[in-house]
Image 1: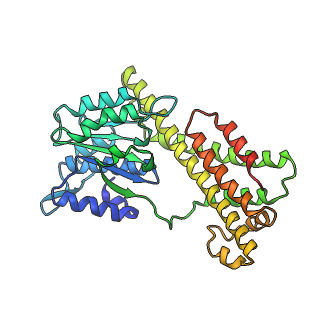
Image 2 (image 1 turned 45 degrees about the horizontal axis):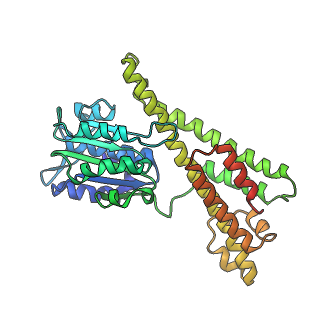
Image 3 (image 1 turned 120 degrees about the horizontal axis):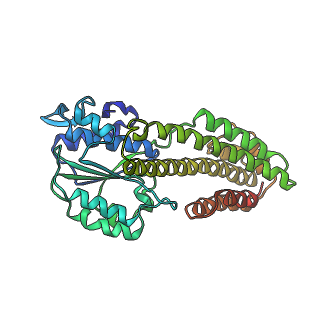
Length: 348
């Protein structure tokens, strides 16, 4: 892919291309956005652009890749000697300090095939303090002709010392981002089921089944999508050591994307519960119309039915429960247990 293939990210790309045209390539970038897979594609495109054999130019400087030359193809397929990637690989989905030290060792070497060495840290928010601190010196004094690109969907989780040393570009979708048909249909089903009388545990566990079914389908889709981009599918005769590494990277990429999409689904629930809270406030003030104008999903009839039977303080507590659930899922807690406890705590 080339930068021209990201029409929805025109603003961030234009800022990046403007600096490239002025030959002001930063030594370290932080790409923040909603989709980790899209951020990876953007980082790959930047790596191709600065090393492309036949780039699109502005004022004599490369601003986009041809996406066809040998260098572009090698970077796209993950087998270029000067492009290095680090991803969370352990069971705890963190980036180990050993991985960062290996990356720093690679980046200190001179480029062997192209003008620049590029190091990409995927899900940089998974860097723990030890790994981040080991990385700081390289960020402060990067080797000549090297570029570091950090990718994250949660920049607030990065250390301030890391943030301050990177040029940040936002590739988020913005507030106007629409729901996918699958998410819209799922939320409608969930809210309708939640709006039914919740007088027994059976009803709550039905909600649990609906949530787990959506997460299972989500993970299957991610596995199919991410596996299709893995070098494992292209290089069947690779050496065992390389295959093992690719398998570890694949599993880490699947888990990272799943966690990201799971967080998005729970954020969707949080927005819906915020609608419930707004409606409880509106009903208390005797102004339903005012609250409806602020709703994220005004079309969902179940929202009002729940709001009519709980107090605003209970609706506030529901939002706190979702926040607590998200925090717990960043630890080593068992997913199903955390979700079960969270759903049982909701006042519906």
